[in-house]
Image (tube, rainbow, N blue to C red; front, side, top):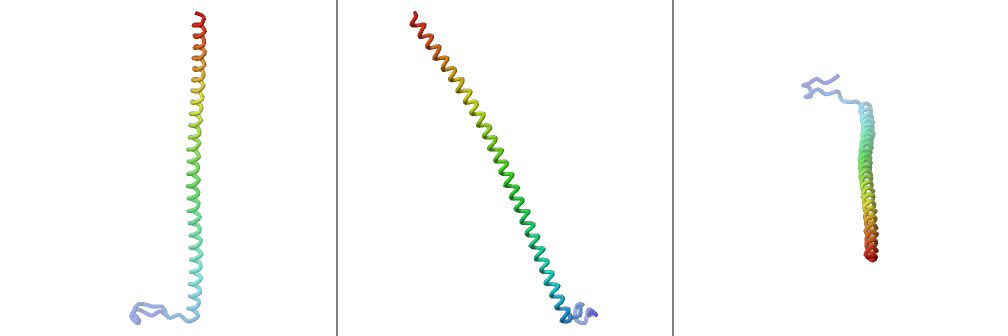
Length: 111
């Protein structure tokens, strides 16, 4: 059985036989491999989550940019419309002024 405290300092388990030692080493190696595989799986899972988060952030940024661009396009369209209306009014006013000027000139000729 176990050595009691006092004989060799603290209590120790009895020394292992060669077969027990080999079994223990094999068990430890298997456990380490499982841990490594587990770590690799966890690391891969974390990487996947990180990539997904990055992708989501990129997609959200693109959507925000697209809606900003859409808003700018809408604003441009409004400005173009306003400009076209102003040009039409100016042209109409210019034509009217020209017509009025011609009429006045013709009246002056008549007098």
